Length: 318
Image (spheres, rainbow, N blue to C red):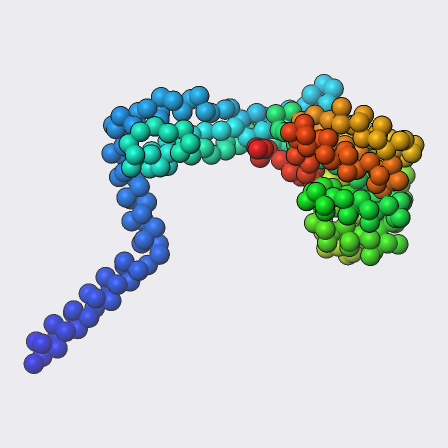
């Protein structure tokens, strides 16, 4: 009897241990990983794998490092492409033939990013990226903001609005409307001063006050700073970086504050739009009336319109 009880206890113990072993997610992951590795080792001598290995170079691209250009200053890097040979082989092994549609590509990061560069202004994205960003600076023009937002929503576009701090404090409802539409929020200083004429202490005050009121109003922390009127100096860049923001300017200017003819403005900007461009605009009558045409024209050039963060990231598009 005692012997039977002892055998039963041992059986139960072994059952529990084996159950936990095979049901444990970490154990399952280990087994799956081991199987994949075994498959990979077996495939490395396979003719299909060798063909993937031979042809993969035609589909790969080296990552491009961020750099400081003599004219354009800080230019972001761009991810490269590499064939995942193991996963590509797994995709093709059932058919047993090479099929480029079943290749698995993964992005490779550059060694140098914007974060690695010394503080410098940014005027554009990487020219290899088929994307542009609207940089909408807001310190006035309340009457045209709803129409701008309506047109952007119609085209399913989110971009970046740089908000003046004092404007945000006076117009919390409009600031929230911009954020609720999914647009990125940047810092445009508090009182629209000339940053070339400010001390470092005053610059820091302007930027900090603006970020604080934006965070309190729309619960967003700005990571980009657009100097009012594009006025800045070396200290501006350093102060902004010290507050964990990078300074952005623009590549193409709508000059909408001069009230140009909307169609003429749109045609001029469309002609100048190119991969990596940042397009400056404001909530003006010209921009509100010309935005629909501007968006269509840019997209017809094969360019996606997105946020400053999307444009300046290393992530590939498309």
